[in-house]
Image 1: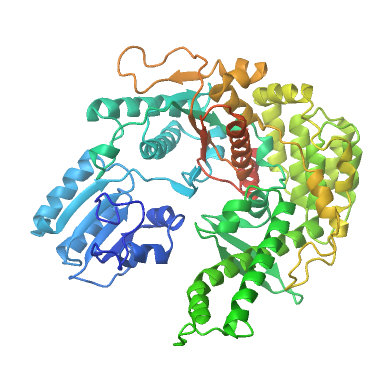
Image 2: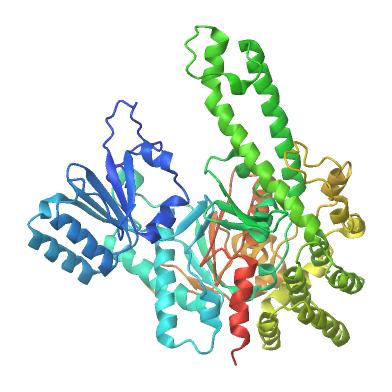
Length: 638
Protein backbone atom coordinates (compact mmCIF):
# COMPACT_ATOMS: atom_id res chain seq x y z
CA UNK A 1 0.00 0.00 0.00
CA UNK A 2 2.79 2.45 0.90
CA UNK A 3 4.45 1.56 -2.42
CA UNK A 4 1.21 2.47 -4.20
CA UNK A 5 0.05 -1.16 -4.19
CA UNK A 6 2.93 -2.36 -6.33
CA UNK A 7 4.41 -5.69 -5.25
CA UNK A 8 7.88 -5.08 -3.79
CA UNK A 9 10.50 -7.06 -1.91
CA UNK A 10 9.90 -7.69 1.78
CA UNK A 11 12.16 -4.82 2.81
CA UNK A 12 11.28 -1.17 2.12
CA UNK A 13 12.92 0.69 -0.75
CA UNK A 14 15.20 3.34 0.70
CA UNK A 15 16.49 6.50 -0.89
CA UNK A 16 19.85 4.80 -1.44
CA UNK A 17 18.34 1.95 -3.46
CA UNK A 18 18.69 1.79 -7.21
CA UNK A 19 14.96 2.08 -7.60
CA UNK A 20 13.82 5.65 -7.17
CA UNK A 21 11.63 6.28 -4.15
CA UNK A 22 8.36 8.14 -4.65
CA UNK A 23 7.80 10.65 -1.86
CA UNK A 24 4.24 11.04 -0.63
CA UNK A 25 1.89 12.06 2.18
CA UNK A 26 -0.03 9.53 4.29
CA UNK A 27 -3.53 10.56 5.37
CA UNK A 28 -5.10 8.53 8.20
CA UNK A 29 -8.11 8.50 10.51
CA UNK A 30 -7.98 7.50 14.15
CA UNK A 31 -8.77 3.85 13.46
CA UNK A 32 -6.11 3.44 10.79
CA UNK A 33 -3.61 5.33 12.94
CA UNK A 34 -3.97 2.61 15.57
CA UNK A 35 -3.49 -0.07 12.90
CA UNK A 36 -0.33 1.53 11.51
CA UNK A 37 1.26 2.75 14.76
CA UNK A 38 1.43 -0.71 16.31
CA UNK A 39 3.77 -1.99 13.58
CA UNK A 40 5.51 1.05 12.05
CA UNK A 41 7.35 4.03 13.48
CA UNK A 42 8.09 7.42 11.91
CA UNK A 43 11.50 6.26 10.68
CA UNK A 44 9.88 3.22 9.07
CA UNK A 45 7.45 5.48 7.24
CA UNK A 46 10.38 7.53 5.93
CA UNK A 47 11.92 4.34 4.55
CA UNK A 48 8.72 3.82 2.59
CA UNK A 49 8.79 7.36 1.20
CA UNK A 50 6.25 8.91 3.60
CA UNK A 51 7.45 12.42 4.35
CA UNK A 52 4.38 13.50 6.32
CA UNK A 53 1.37 11.86 7.94
CA UNK A 54 -1.78 13.61 9.11
CA UNK A 55 -5.30 12.91 10.37
CA UNK A 56 -8.05 13.32 7.81
CA UNK A 57 -10.37 15.20 10.19
CA UNK A 58 -7.80 17.81 11.14
CA UNK A 59 -6.59 20.83 9.22
CA UNK A 60 -3.93 19.83 6.71
CA UNK A 61 -1.57 21.89 4.57
CA UNK A 62 -2.40 21.85 0.87
CA UNK A 63 0.40 20.21 -1.16
CA UNK A 64 -0.80 20.27 -4.80
CA UNK A 65 2.51 18.90 -6.13
CA UNK A 66 2.69 15.88 -3.77
CA UNK A 67 0.97 12.50 -4.10
CA UNK A 68 -1.19 11.31 -1.21
CA UNK A 69 -1.93 7.82 0.10
CA UNK A 70 -5.19 7.65 2.04
CA UNK A 71 -5.71 4.82 4.51
CA UNK A 72 -9.05 5.32 6.26
CA UNK A 73 -12.20 3.54 7.39
CA UNK A 74 -14.99 3.34 4.78
CA UNK A 75 -17.31 5.89 6.36
CA UNK A 76 -19.53 8.62 4.90
CA UNK A 77 -17.51 11.28 6.75
CA UNK A 78 -14.15 10.09 5.41
CA UNK A 79 -15.44 9.85 1.85
CA UNK A 80 -16.78 13.40 2.11
CA UNK A 81 -13.33 14.59 3.24
CA UNK A 82 -11.61 12.83 0.33
CA UNK A 83 -14.06 14.34 -2.18
CA UNK A 84 -13.42 17.80 -0.69
CA UNK A 85 -9.66 17.28 -1.03
CA UNK A 86 -10.03 16.20 -4.65
CA UNK A 87 -12.27 19.17 -5.42
CA UNK A 88 -9.77 21.61 -3.86
CA UNK A 89 -6.69 20.10 -5.58
CA UNK A 90 -5.26 19.37 -2.14
CA UNK A 91 -2.76 16.83 -3.56
CA UNK A 92 -1.39 15.92 -7.00
CA UNK A 93 -2.63 12.31 -7.11
CA UNK A 94 -4.87 10.32 -4.78
CA UNK A 95 -4.29 6.67 -3.86
CA UNK A 96 -7.28 5.70 -1.72
CA UNK A 97 -7.19 2.66 0.56
CA UNK A 98 -9.93 1.56 2.95
CA UNK A 99 -9.32 -0.47 6.10
CA UNK A 100 -12.23 -2.78 5.21
CA UNK A 101 -14.71 -3.30 2.41
CA UNK A 102 -16.42 -0.22 0.99
CA UNK A 103 -20.12 -0.93 0.47
CA UNK A 104 -21.61 -0.80 -3.02
CA UNK A 105 -23.87 2.20 -2.32
CA UNK A 106 -21.00 4.21 -0.79
CA UNK A 107 -18.72 3.31 -3.68
CA UNK A 108 -21.29 4.48 -6.25
CA UNK A 109 -21.87 7.69 -4.31
CA UNK A 110 -18.09 8.22 -4.08
CA UNK A 111 -17.66 7.77 -7.84
CA UNK A 112 -20.57 10.06 -8.67
CA UNK A 113 -19.38 12.93 -6.47
CA UNK A 114 -15.75 12.65 -7.60
CA UNK A 115 -16.93 12.87 -11.20
CA UNK A 116 -18.83 16.04 -10.39
CA UNK A 117 -15.61 17.73 -9.20
CA UNK A 118 -14.06 17.43 -12.66
CA UNK A 119 -10.88 16.06 -11.07
CA UNK A 120 -11.66 12.35 -11.25
CA UNK A 121 -8.40 11.78 -13.17
CA UNK A 122 -6.54 12.54 -9.94
CA UNK A 123 -7.94 9.37 -8.30
CA UNK A 124 -5.37 6.77 -9.33
CA UNK A 125 -6.40 3.84 -7.13
CA UNK A 126 -9.21 2.72 -4.84
CA UNK A 127 -8.54 -0.44 -2.80
CA UNK A 128 -10.21 -2.41 -0.05
CA UNK A 129 -7.19 -3.45 2.03
CA UNK A 130 -8.94 -5.70 4.57
CA UNK A 131 -6.65 -4.58 7.38
CA UNK A 132 -9.26 -3.71 10.00
CA UNK A 133 -7.42 -5.25 12.95
CA UNK A 134 -4.47 -4.32 15.13
CA UNK A 135 -1.32 -6.44 15.29
CA UNK A 136 1.12 -5.99 18.16
CA UNK A 137 3.11 -9.17 17.54
CA UNK A 138 3.32 -11.57 14.58
CA UNK A 139 1.02 -14.07 16.33
CA UNK A 140 -1.19 -11.66 18.28
CA UNK A 141 -3.98 -9.40 17.06
CA UNK A 142 -7.02 -7.55 18.33
CA UNK A 143 -10.06 -5.84 16.85
CA UNK A 144 -9.67 -3.20 19.58
CA UNK A 145 -13.42 -3.25 20.24
CA UNK A 146 -14.40 -2.15 23.73
CA UNK A 147 -17.05 -3.54 26.11
CA UNK A 148 -17.97 -6.52 23.94
CA UNK A 149 -18.28 -8.84 26.92
CA UNK A 150 -20.57 -6.44 28.80
CA UNK A 151 -22.71 -5.82 25.74
CA UNK A 152 -23.21 -9.50 24.88
CA UNK A 153 -23.98 -10.50 28.48
CA UNK A 154 -26.26 -7.59 29.34
CA UNK A 155 -29.92 -8.75 29.21
CA UNK A 156 -30.92 -5.17 28.32
CA UNK A 157 -28.91 -5.15 25.08
CA UNK A 158 -31.36 -5.02 22.18
CA UNK A 159 -31.17 -7.27 19.14
CA UNK A 160 -30.09 -4.52 16.74
CA UNK A 161 -27.09 -3.66 18.93
CA UNK A 162 -26.04 -7.31 19.09
CA UNK A 163 -26.44 -7.71 15.33
CA UNK A 164 -24.39 -4.55 14.65
CA UNK A 165 -21.59 -5.66 16.96
CA UNK A 166 -21.57 -9.18 15.46
CA UNK A 167 -21.24 -7.72 11.95
CA UNK A 168 -18.37 -5.53 13.14
CA UNK A 169 -16.53 -8.56 14.59
CA UNK A 170 -17.21 -10.65 11.47
CA UNK A 171 -15.75 -7.87 9.31
CA UNK A 172 -12.58 -7.75 11.42
CA UNK A 173 -12.18 -11.53 11.38
CA UNK A 174 -12.80 -11.60 7.64
CA UNK A 175 -9.91 -9.14 7.22
CA UNK A 176 -7.65 -11.28 9.41
CA UNK A 177 -8.49 -14.45 7.48
CA UNK A 178 -7.81 -12.78 4.13
CA UNK A 179 -4.45 -11.58 5.44
CA UNK A 180 -3.57 -15.15 6.48
CA UNK A 181 -4.14 -16.32 2.92
CA UNK A 182 -5.92 -19.61 3.56
CA UNK A 183 -9.54 -20.70 4.01
CA UNK A 184 -9.80 -22.23 7.48
CA UNK A 185 -12.16 -24.79 8.89
CA UNK A 186 -14.26 -22.97 11.51
CA UNK A 187 -14.95 -24.52 14.90
CA UNK A 188 -17.03 -22.79 17.55
CA UNK A 189 -18.59 -23.50 20.91
CA UNK A 190 -22.39 -23.51 20.87
CA UNK A 191 -25.03 -21.31 22.38
CA UNK A 192 -23.33 -17.91 22.50
CA UNK A 193 -22.06 -15.00 20.38
CA UNK A 194 -19.26 -17.16 18.96
CA UNK A 195 -21.82 -19.41 17.29
CA UNK A 196 -23.57 -16.50 15.58
CA UNK A 197 -20.22 -15.03 14.48
CA UNK A 198 -19.10 -18.41 13.11
CA UNK A 199 -22.27 -18.76 11.03
CA UNK A 200 -22.01 -15.27 9.54
CA UNK A 201 -18.27 -15.56 8.89
CA UNK A 202 -18.76 -18.92 7.18
CA UNK A 203 -21.40 -17.37 4.92
CA UNK A 204 -19.19 -14.40 4.05
CA UNK A 205 -16.10 -16.52 3.33
CA UNK A 206 -18.19 -18.89 1.21
CA UNK A 207 -19.60 -16.00 -0.84
CA UNK A 208 -16.14 -14.52 -1.26
CA UNK A 209 -14.77 -17.85 -2.50
CA UNK A 210 -17.56 -18.23 -5.02
CA UNK A 211 -17.48 -14.65 -6.29
CA UNK A 212 -13.73 -14.37 -6.76
CA UNK A 213 -13.24 -17.95 -8.04
CA UNK A 214 -9.81 -17.72 -6.52
CA UNK A 215 -10.44 -17.30 -2.82
CA UNK A 216 -8.66 -14.78 -0.69
CA UNK A 217 -7.14 -12.69 -3.48
CA UNK A 218 -4.93 -9.93 -2.08
CA UNK A 219 -5.02 -6.59 -3.97
CA UNK A 220 -1.88 -5.68 -5.86
CA UNK A 221 -0.29 -9.09 -5.37
CA UNK A 222 0.98 -10.90 -8.44
CA UNK A 223 -0.36 -14.31 -9.37
CA UNK A 224 2.71 -16.11 -8.07
CA UNK A 225 1.86 -15.03 -4.55
CA UNK A 226 -1.89 -15.23 -5.00
CA UNK A 227 -2.44 -18.94 -4.51
CA UNK A 228 -4.05 -20.35 -1.41
CA UNK A 229 -1.63 -22.22 0.81
CA UNK A 230 -2.25 -25.93 1.11
CA UNK A 231 -1.68 -26.17 4.82
CA UNK A 232 -4.58 -27.31 6.96
CA UNK A 233 -5.78 -24.40 9.06
CA UNK A 234 -8.57 -23.97 11.59
CA UNK A 235 -10.25 -20.92 13.11
CA UNK A 236 -11.41 -21.61 16.68
CA UNK A 237 -14.06 -19.16 17.89
CA UNK A 238 -14.70 -19.13 21.63
CA UNK A 239 -16.89 -17.15 24.01
CA UNK A 240 -15.19 -15.48 26.95
CA UNK A 241 -17.43 -17.37 29.37
CA UNK A 242 -15.61 -20.63 28.70
CA UNK A 243 -12.99 -19.39 31.18
CA UNK A 244 -13.42 -16.24 33.26
CA UNK A 245 -10.80 -17.11 35.87
CA UNK A 246 -7.86 -16.50 33.51
CA UNK A 247 -8.98 -12.90 33.05
CA UNK A 248 -8.29 -12.16 36.72
CA UNK A 249 -5.13 -14.22 37.23
CA UNK A 250 -1.76 -12.86 38.31
CA UNK A 251 1.13 -13.97 36.14
CA UNK A 252 4.90 -14.26 36.50
CA UNK A 253 5.56 -13.72 32.77
CA UNK A 254 7.33 -10.42 31.97
CA UNK A 255 4.89 -9.29 29.27
CA UNK A 256 1.84 -10.27 31.33
CA UNK A 257 3.17 -8.43 34.38
CA UNK A 258 3.78 -5.25 32.36
CA UNK A 259 0.19 -5.33 31.08
CA UNK A 260 -1.16 -6.18 34.54
CA UNK A 261 0.81 -3.76 36.71
CA UNK A 262 1.20 -0.87 34.27
CA UNK A 263 -0.56 0.02 31.02
CA UNK A 264 0.49 -1.68 27.80
CA UNK A 265 -1.40 -0.55 24.70
CA UNK A 266 -0.27 -0.89 21.09
CA UNK A 267 3.33 -1.56 22.08
CA UNK A 268 3.59 1.46 24.34
CA UNK A 269 4.20 1.03 28.08
CA UNK A 270 2.84 3.74 30.38
CA UNK A 271 4.04 3.85 33.98
CA UNK A 272 2.54 6.22 36.50
CA UNK A 273 4.94 7.11 39.29
CA UNK A 274 4.68 9.23 42.41
CA UNK A 275 7.49 11.30 43.84
CA UNK A 276 8.23 11.73 47.54
CA UNK A 277 6.23 14.97 47.60
CA UNK A 278 3.17 13.21 46.16
CA UNK A 279 3.40 14.54 42.61
CA UNK A 280 2.35 12.09 39.89
CA UNK A 281 4.25 11.73 36.62
CA UNK A 282 3.69 9.52 33.58
CA UNK A 283 6.55 7.76 31.84
CA UNK A 284 6.09 6.34 28.35
CA UNK A 285 8.28 3.64 26.83
CA UNK A 286 7.85 2.78 23.18
CA UNK A 287 8.45 -0.87 22.27
CA UNK A 288 10.02 -0.87 18.85
CA UNK A 289 9.09 -3.84 16.61
CA UNK A 290 12.84 -4.53 16.46
CA UNK A 291 13.31 -4.43 20.24
CA UNK A 292 15.59 -7.45 20.62
CA UNK A 293 15.17 -7.71 24.39
CA UNK A 294 11.36 -7.64 24.31
CA UNK A 295 11.25 -10.15 21.45
CA UNK A 296 13.45 -12.56 23.37
CA UNK A 297 12.19 -12.04 26.93
CA UNK A 298 8.54 -10.93 26.83
CA UNK A 299 7.29 -14.50 27.17
CA UNK A 300 9.82 -15.51 29.84
CA UNK A 301 9.36 -15.48 33.62
CA UNK A 302 10.11 -12.18 35.33
CA UNK A 303 13.26 -13.45 37.16
CA UNK A 304 14.73 -14.58 33.84
CA UNK A 305 14.13 -11.13 32.35
CA UNK A 306 15.96 -9.56 35.31
CA UNK A 307 18.96 -11.81 34.78
CA UNK A 308 18.98 -11.29 31.02
CA UNK A 309 18.84 -7.49 31.16
CA UNK A 310 21.85 -7.51 33.45
CA UNK A 311 23.66 -9.88 31.11
CA UNK A 312 22.90 -7.61 28.17
CA UNK A 313 24.17 -4.59 30.10
CA UNK A 314 27.42 -6.40 30.94
CA UNK A 315 27.79 -7.46 27.32
CA UNK A 316 27.28 -3.89 26.12
CA UNK A 317 29.71 -2.50 28.70
CA UNK A 318 32.44 -4.93 27.61
CA UNK A 319 31.95 -4.19 23.90
CA UNK A 320 31.89 -0.43 24.47
CA UNK A 321 35.02 -0.64 26.62
CA UNK A 322 36.83 -2.70 23.99
CA UNK A 323 35.93 -0.28 21.19
CA UNK A 324 36.79 2.87 23.14
CA UNK A 325 40.13 1.46 24.32
CA UNK A 326 41.20 0.98 20.71
CA UNK A 327 40.32 4.54 19.76
CA UNK A 328 42.09 6.30 22.60
CA UNK A 329 38.85 7.79 23.95
CA UNK A 330 38.08 7.23 27.61
CA UNK A 331 34.43 6.42 26.88
CA UNK A 332 32.35 5.48 23.86
CA UNK A 333 30.15 8.51 24.64
CA UNK A 334 33.09 10.78 23.84
CA UNK A 335 33.52 9.47 20.28
CA UNK A 336 32.60 12.16 17.78
CA UNK A 337 30.68 10.79 14.74
CA UNK A 338 31.94 13.78 12.74
CA UNK A 339 35.55 12.95 13.52
CA UNK A 340 37.38 13.15 10.20
CA UNK A 341 40.29 11.08 11.42
CA UNK A 342 41.52 8.31 9.13
CA UNK A 343 42.40 6.09 12.06
CA UNK A 344 41.01 2.62 11.33
CA UNK A 345 39.78 2.00 14.87
CA UNK A 346 38.02 5.36 15.07
CA UNK A 347 36.27 4.70 11.77
CA UNK A 348 35.19 1.26 12.99
CA UNK A 349 33.94 2.76 16.24
CA UNK A 350 31.93 5.45 14.42
CA UNK A 351 30.40 2.75 12.24
CA UNK A 352 29.42 0.65 15.28
CA UNK A 353 28.18 3.62 17.31
CA UNK A 354 24.53 3.78 16.04
CA UNK A 355 23.90 0.08 16.69
CA UNK A 356 25.52 0.22 20.12
CA UNK A 357 23.56 3.35 21.04
CA UNK A 358 20.29 1.71 20.02
CA UNK A 359 21.10 -1.39 22.05
CA UNK A 360 21.97 0.71 25.09
CA UNK A 361 18.69 2.65 24.84
CA UNK A 362 16.71 -0.61 24.72
CA UNK A 363 18.62 -2.03 27.68
CA UNK A 364 18.11 1.17 29.70
CA UNK A 365 14.39 1.14 28.92
CA UNK A 366 13.89 -2.42 30.13
CA UNK A 367 16.11 -1.79 33.12
CA UNK A 368 13.74 1.04 34.10
CA UNK A 369 10.61 -1.06 33.49
CA UNK A 370 11.94 -4.00 35.49
CA UNK A 371 12.98 -1.67 38.31
CA UNK A 372 9.43 -0.30 38.50
CA UNK A 373 8.04 -3.86 38.45
CA UNK A 374 10.20 -4.80 41.41
CA UNK A 375 8.92 -1.75 43.29
CA UNK A 376 5.34 -2.84 42.67
CA UNK A 377 6.13 -6.40 43.75
CA UNK A 378 7.58 -5.14 46.99
CA UNK A 379 4.80 -2.64 47.63
CA UNK A 380 1.85 -4.93 46.96
CA UNK A 381 3.08 -8.46 47.75
CA UNK A 382 2.10 -9.51 44.24
CA UNK A 383 4.10 -12.72 44.43
CA UNK A 384 1.93 -13.90 47.32
CA UNK A 385 -1.23 -13.62 45.22
CA UNK A 386 0.50 -15.49 42.44
CA UNK A 387 1.45 -18.25 44.87
CA UNK A 388 -2.11 -18.58 46.20
CA UNK A 389 -3.52 -18.88 42.69
CA UNK A 390 -1.01 -21.58 41.80
CA UNK A 391 -1.98 -23.61 44.86
CA UNK A 392 -5.71 -23.00 44.66
CA UNK A 393 -6.71 -26.55 45.61
CA UNK A 394 -4.39 -26.83 48.62
CA UNK A 395 -6.55 -26.96 51.81
CA UNK A 396 -4.04 -24.71 53.57
CA UNK A 397 -4.33 -21.99 50.97
CA UNK A 398 -7.53 -20.55 52.46
CA UNK A 399 -5.76 -19.79 55.73
CA UNK A 400 -2.82 -18.39 53.80
CA UNK A 401 -5.14 -16.18 51.76
CA UNK A 402 -6.95 -14.85 54.84
CA UNK A 403 -3.61 -13.86 56.34
CA UNK A 404 -2.76 -12.13 53.07
CA UNK A 405 -6.11 -10.32 53.05
CA UNK A 406 -5.49 -8.90 56.53
CA UNK A 407 -1.90 -7.89 55.87
CA UNK A 408 -1.10 -4.19 55.40
CA UNK A 409 1.16 -3.21 52.51
CA UNK A 410 2.84 -0.07 51.23
CA UNK A 411 0.75 -0.06 48.08
CA UNK A 412 -2.98 -0.49 47.60
CA UNK A 413 -3.53 -4.12 46.65
CA UNK A 414 -7.27 -4.29 47.32
CA UNK A 415 -8.02 -5.12 43.67
CA UNK A 416 -5.41 -7.88 43.78
CA UNK A 417 -7.25 -9.36 46.75
CA UNK A 418 -10.54 -9.19 44.87
CA UNK A 419 -9.03 -10.84 41.79
CA UNK A 420 -7.59 -13.77 43.71
CA UNK A 421 -10.82 -14.20 45.66
CA UNK A 422 -12.81 -14.29 42.39
CA UNK A 423 -10.52 -17.03 41.06
CA UNK A 424 -10.96 -19.06 44.26
CA UNK A 425 -14.73 -18.55 44.09
CA UNK A 426 -14.89 -19.71 40.47
CA UNK A 427 -12.65 -22.74 40.86
CA UNK A 428 -13.49 -24.03 44.35
CA UNK A 429 -16.44 -24.70 46.59
CA UNK A 430 -15.59 -22.38 49.47
CA UNK A 431 -16.99 -22.54 53.03
CA UNK A 432 -19.62 -19.91 53.71
CA UNK A 433 -17.75 -18.56 56.74
CA UNK A 434 -14.60 -18.12 54.62
CA UNK A 435 -16.55 -16.24 51.94
CA UNK A 436 -18.19 -13.97 54.50
CA UNK A 437 -14.90 -13.08 56.14
CA UNK A 438 -13.20 -12.36 52.79
CA UNK A 439 -16.06 -10.22 51.55
CA UNK A 440 -16.17 -8.21 54.77
CA UNK A 441 -12.48 -7.40 54.35
CA UNK A 442 -13.04 -6.40 50.72
CA UNK A 443 -15.97 -4.14 51.67
CA UNK A 444 -13.91 -2.53 54.41
CA UNK A 445 -11.25 -1.61 51.84
CA UNK A 446 -13.84 0.48 49.99
CA UNK A 447 -14.07 -1.70 46.89
CA UNK A 448 -17.15 -1.82 44.71
CA UNK A 449 -18.18 -5.50 44.73
CA UNK A 450 -20.59 -5.35 41.79
CA UNK A 451 -18.16 -7.39 39.71
CA UNK A 452 -18.18 -10.10 42.38
CA UNK A 453 -21.98 -10.08 42.38
CA UNK A 454 -21.95 -10.74 38.65
CA UNK A 455 -19.38 -13.54 39.02
CA UNK A 456 -21.59 -15.20 41.61
CA UNK A 457 -24.53 -15.09 39.24
CA UNK A 458 -22.42 -16.59 36.43
CA UNK A 459 -21.48 -19.51 38.63
CA UNK A 460 -25.02 -19.99 39.83
CA UNK A 461 -26.25 -20.17 36.23
CA UNK A 462 -23.72 -22.92 35.61
CA UNK A 463 -22.02 -21.08 32.74
CA UNK A 464 -18.65 -22.32 33.88
CA UNK A 465 -19.36 -26.00 33.24
CA UNK A 466 -16.75 -26.26 30.50
CA UNK A 467 -14.02 -24.78 32.70
CA UNK A 468 -15.00 -27.02 35.59
CA UNK A 469 -14.66 -30.09 33.39
CA UNK A 470 -11.22 -29.08 32.19
CA UNK A 471 -10.04 -28.10 35.65
CA UNK A 472 -11.23 -31.38 37.11
CA UNK A 473 -9.23 -33.22 34.47
CA UNK A 474 -6.17 -31.14 35.27
CA UNK A 475 -6.47 -31.82 38.98
CA UNK A 476 -6.58 -35.55 38.32
CA UNK A 477 -3.35 -35.17 36.39
CA UNK A 478 -1.74 -33.25 39.24
CA UNK A 479 -1.70 -29.93 37.44
CA UNK A 480 -3.58 -28.09 40.16
CA UNK A 481 -0.62 -27.49 42.48
CA UNK A 482 1.98 -26.03 40.18
CA UNK A 483 4.69 -25.52 42.78
CA UNK A 484 4.74 -28.94 44.39
CA UNK A 485 6.30 -29.02 47.85
CA UNK A 486 8.69 -26.15 47.30
CA UNK A 487 6.22 -23.28 47.08
CA UNK A 488 7.05 -22.00 50.57
CA UNK A 489 10.19 -20.33 49.21
CA UNK A 490 7.94 -17.92 47.33
CA UNK A 491 6.23 -16.62 50.46
CA UNK A 492 9.04 -14.34 51.56
CA UNK A 493 9.92 -12.87 48.19
CA UNK A 494 8.34 -9.45 48.65
CA UNK A 495 10.08 -8.74 51.95
CA UNK A 496 13.42 -9.66 50.43
CA UNK A 497 12.94 -7.21 47.57
CA UNK A 498 13.22 -4.21 49.88
CA UNK A 499 16.18 -2.02 49.06
CA UNK A 500 16.76 -3.45 45.60
CA UNK A 501 15.09 -0.69 43.62
CA UNK A 502 17.50 2.19 44.01
CA UNK A 503 17.64 4.42 40.92
CA UNK A 504 20.50 3.80 38.58
CA UNK A 505 21.30 0.41 40.03
CA UNK A 506 23.02 -1.63 37.35
CA UNK A 507 22.24 -4.85 39.23
CA UNK A 508 18.54 -5.36 39.73
CA UNK A 509 19.13 -8.66 41.47
CA UNK A 510 21.71 -7.20 43.83
CA UNK A 511 20.54 -8.21 47.29
CA UNK A 512 18.50 -11.11 45.98
CA UNK A 513 21.54 -13.33 46.09
CA UNK A 514 20.56 -16.94 45.53
CA UNK A 515 16.85 -16.11 45.77
CA UNK A 516 16.50 -15.43 42.04
CA UNK A 517 18.14 -18.75 41.18
CA UNK A 518 15.93 -20.42 43.79
CA UNK A 519 12.85 -18.89 42.22
CA UNK A 520 13.88 -20.13 38.80
CA UNK A 521 14.07 -23.68 40.09
CA UNK A 522 10.64 -23.38 41.65
CA UNK A 523 8.82 -21.69 38.78
CA UNK A 524 5.46 -23.34 38.11
CA UNK A 525 5.46 -26.38 35.91
CA UNK A 526 3.95 -25.55 32.57
CA UNK A 527 0.27 -26.41 32.72
CA UNK A 528 -2.42 -25.69 30.19
CA UNK A 529 -5.11 -23.08 30.65
CA UNK A 530 -8.64 -24.16 29.63
CA UNK A 531 -8.33 -22.40 26.27
CA UNK A 532 -5.09 -24.28 25.53
CA UNK A 533 -6.77 -27.60 26.36
CA UNK A 534 -9.51 -26.75 23.86
CA UNK A 535 -6.97 -25.84 21.16
CA UNK A 536 -5.03 -29.03 21.85
CA UNK A 537 -8.19 -31.15 21.43
CA UNK A 538 -8.93 -29.55 18.03
CA UNK A 539 -5.38 -29.14 16.71
CA UNK A 540 -3.87 -32.42 17.90
CA UNK A 541 -6.74 -34.64 19.12
CA UNK A 542 -4.46 -37.66 19.42
CA UNK A 543 -2.65 -35.94 22.31
CA UNK A 544 -5.63 -34.38 24.12
CA UNK A 545 -7.35 -35.63 27.25
CA UNK A 546 -10.77 -37.23 27.00
CA UNK A 547 -12.62 -34.42 28.79
CA UNK A 548 -11.38 -31.87 26.25
CA UNK A 549 -12.26 -34.16 23.36
CA UNK A 550 -15.76 -34.75 24.69
CA UNK A 551 -16.27 -30.99 24.90
CA UNK A 552 -14.88 -30.06 21.49
CA UNK A 553 -16.62 -32.92 19.69
CA UNK A 554 -19.81 -30.95 20.27
CA UNK A 555 -18.38 -27.76 18.76
CA UNK A 556 -19.85 -26.48 15.51
CA UNK A 557 -17.98 -27.31 12.31
CA UNK A 558 -17.97 -25.19 9.13
CA UNK A 559 -15.95 -25.57 5.95
CA UNK A 560 -16.23 -22.29 3.95
CA UNK A 561 -14.02 -23.65 1.13
CA UNK A 562 -16.66 -26.27 0.36
CA UNK A 563 -19.04 -24.39 -1.91
CA UNK A 564 -21.31 -27.36 -2.46
CA UNK A 565 -23.33 -29.56 -0.17
CA UNK A 566 -24.25 -28.88 3.45
CA UNK A 567 -22.84 -25.69 4.88
CA UNK A 568 -22.26 -27.19 8.31
CA UNK A 569 -20.78 -30.67 8.51
CA UNK A 570 -20.76 -32.93 11.56
CA UNK A 571 -17.70 -32.37 13.75
CA UNK A 572 -14.78 -34.67 13.08
CA UNK A 573 -11.42 -35.12 14.69
CA UNK A 574 -8.59 -34.00 12.46
CA UNK A 575 -5.15 -32.51 13.03
CA UNK A 576 -4.20 -29.08 11.67
CA UNK A 577 -0.98 -27.23 10.88
CA UNK A 578 -2.19 -23.78 11.80
CA UNK A 579 -4.78 -22.39 14.20
CA UNK A 580 -6.23 -18.94 14.66
CA UNK A 581 -7.82 -18.76 18.11
CA UNK A 582 -10.25 -15.90 18.63
CA UNK A 583 -12.00 -15.08 21.91
CA UNK A 584 -15.22 -13.07 21.74
CA UNK A 585 -15.45 -10.76 24.75
CA UNK A 586 -11.83 -10.04 25.55
CA UNK A 587 -8.51 -11.83 25.80
CA UNK A 588 -5.21 -11.37 27.61
CA UNK A 589 -1.48 -11.93 27.35
CA UNK A 590 -1.63 -14.86 29.78
CA UNK A 591 -3.68 -16.97 27.38
CA UNK A 592 -1.54 -15.87 24.46
CA UNK A 593 1.66 -16.81 26.30
CA UNK A 594 0.22 -20.16 27.42
CA UNK A 595 -0.78 -21.05 23.87
CA UNK A 596 2.63 -20.11 22.47
CA UNK A 597 4.41 -22.14 25.18
CA UNK A 598 2.29 -25.17 24.35
CA UNK A 599 2.86 -24.74 20.62
CA UNK A 600 6.63 -24.31 21.06
CA UNK A 601 6.74 -27.43 23.20
CA UNK A 602 4.78 -29.34 20.56
CA UNK A 603 7.11 -28.21 17.79
CA UNK A 604 10.27 -28.98 19.76
CA UNK A 605 9.08 -32.51 20.58
CA UNK A 606 7.90 -33.27 17.06
CA UNK A 607 9.91 -36.01 15.38
CA UNK A 608 8.72 -34.78 12.01
CA UNK A 609 9.51 -31.51 10.24
CA UNK A 610 5.92 -30.41 10.79
CA UNK A 611 5.87 -27.08 12.60
CA UNK A 612 2.55 -25.76 13.85
CA UNK A 613 1.57 -22.12 14.29
CA UNK A 614 -1.00 -20.62 16.64
CA UNK A 615 -2.29 -17.07 16.26
CA UNK A 616 -4.25 -15.60 19.16
CA UNK A 617 -6.77 -12.83 18.77
CA UNK A 618 -9.65 -11.24 20.59
CA UNK A 619 -12.15 -8.43 20.37
CA UNK A 620 -9.76 -6.61 22.72
CA UNK A 621 -6.64 -7.47 24.71
CA UNK A 622 -8.03 -6.44 28.09
CA UNK A 623 -6.38 -5.20 31.24
CA UNK A 624 -7.66 -6.78 34.45
CA UNK A 625 -9.02 -3.42 35.62
CA UNK A 626 -10.85 -2.97 32.34
CA UNK A 627 -12.46 -6.40 32.53
CA UNK A 628 -13.40 -5.82 36.17
CA UNK A 629 -15.20 -2.66 35.08
CA UNK A 630 -17.15 -4.62 32.46
CA UNK A 631 -18.17 -7.21 35.04
CA UNK A 632 -19.06 -4.44 37.48
CA UNK A 633 -21.36 -2.85 34.90
CA UNK A 634 -23.19 -6.19 34.70
CA UNK A 635 -23.44 -6.51 38.48
CA UNK A 636 -26.50 -4.25 38.65
CA UNK A 637 -28.34 -6.08 35.87
CA UNK A 638 -31.12 -8.52 36.60
